[in-house]
Length: 143
Ligand code: HEM
Image 1 (cartoon, protein in one colour):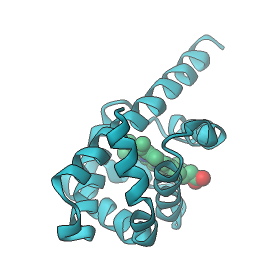
Image 2 (image 1 turned 180 degrees about the horizontal axis):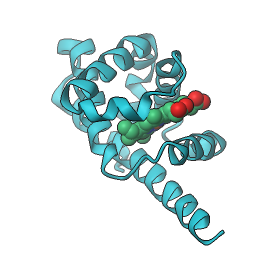
Image 3 (image 1 turned 90 degrees about the vertical axis):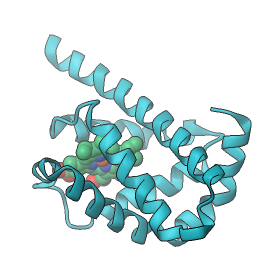
Image 4 (image 1 turned 90 degrees about the horizontal axis):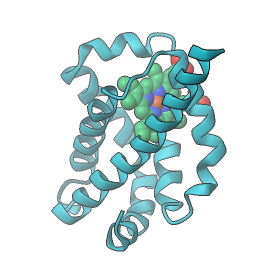
């Protein structure tokens, strides 16, 4: 991730926090429209799950230059993801929906530069999860 991307993410963190719930609500709508089969994955999720995802997106934005601060949170969420069989192929689904939601909620404030920074940052975080989850799936397979 470039320095410039980190600066943009940090600068937009307060706006993302302010609109966190609107963004994640819009995200699920876009996700389920584009990939109705994703609904199955969320069938046992808690009703307030979108608030937790919003909180994590904000925490990520605020800590982009100190991702160690997210360590425990990532571990916990990766385990939850593995329990519902989340796969690497699902990450672009959520990525596209999240980016679409940021665009929708921020409107003109979401400049191409900001959107590119969020795209880079989301896929960076997605890789952290994908690798962690691969580790857990492998441990389970050999346990
Ligand atoms: C970088 C991207 C992602 C982030 C930041 C993220 C974050 C979270 C968080 C914070 C939770 C709530 C944990 C809790 O209840 O304490 C969660 C749960 C969940 N996530 Fe993700 N997630 C990501 C990607 C995905 C993807 C790609 C999918 C699949 C479409 C997915 C499906 C789920 C499901 C189904 C749960 C609920 C598990 C359950 O309680 O039944 N997530 N995620």
